[in-house]
Length: 65
Image (cartoon, rainbow, N blue to C red; front, side):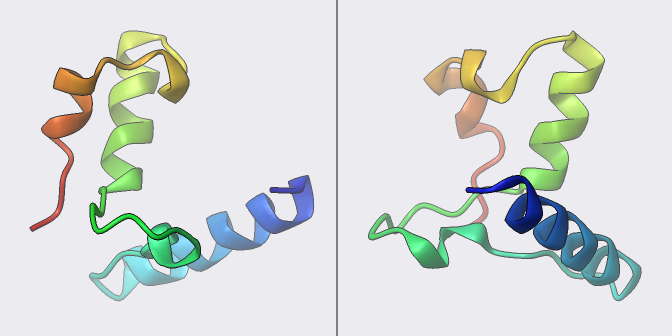
């Protein structure tokens, strides 16, 4: 993902948050698992880690059913 694409997705996510929703980034993947990316970013900021450094167990708490 390019910086421009990331910036556009962040902007779209902000708009979705104001509307009470979220952006499902998994549309580009064959995976059936969907995550709450806004919550993941908040968690990572709080823990001072990068999303790529999260464990599978940590990621499981952000699965959207």
